Image 1: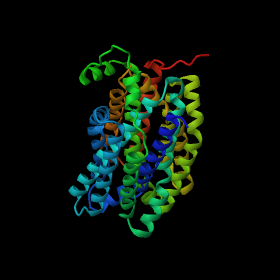
Image 2: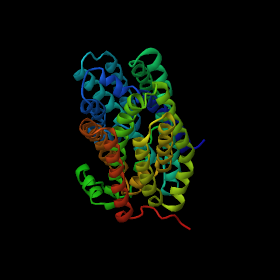
Image 3: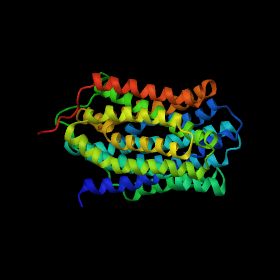
Length: 397
């Protein structure tokens, strides 16, 4: 087995455990937050504070992985997420719950950002799309099937049971990082051009911020994070539970079916990204995701709810690897950690503002208007990327 394959396999196992736990909370997190007697905006903030922590930790995660190594950064992230999820269980008031979600988000931010850095370390542009597709497919699949055990646990053991499950999954991810994942920091150093001295972090970020394509693909990541956390993780469970009157396990089944379809699409899409370039995939999947939110707004039965999840899953599978591959392509030699940290940080802004903005729209104009806004945001950024972003990788014919 090659070094690349070994690292990829164990990173897929790690991210599967980590995201399975997160996915298990998706059906119950907004419903549990509601038990504190707070508004829709506050429920959105309970989800958004998780993204705020990921945003705050994005750049420090890259610095830690450069200074101490990728393994320690992953392990610390797993342990922090474990602590945050356990504290969520014991929170007795809404502010305590917010603090717990922030700690869990900080740990998750370290895991996700460091994972992106590791993938950039072990891949070359010619194989980057399909390698990231395998990893991203595992990521999407785990989040998607997580609602199955999460819905079952919530239905049979109460809304806190998925948090226990998530804490166990986070601990497992941290243990895998320590015991099985190989260090890849040396690969990034080998890719540096000999005699080149990397500029300070601040100057590296300035270089990346002047790259039009990098900024636009980060905008794609931001828009998808905003609509995913604000719409799929916040509004969609509420629509399923209160508007359509579905059981928790029915919501979990619908989310899982969408994830399975996404998993089927993710590797062929990764091959297409390497064969045809990144732009050919990024814009279309953004428009498909917008369409899924329009379907959610019109859903009035389990079938309609499931069909919307199916379209969302397929769109996520098609576009899973392309934005990260584009961002990694844009990184100058030796700047993988800075590029992927900034990419994740800009995307994580969506995790912060999405649940709050769309939660506010729910309070003032209803769930349908919030989902229409999500579709508009995705359509605008998708059209902007299609028009102005250059192709980052042109395969040899």
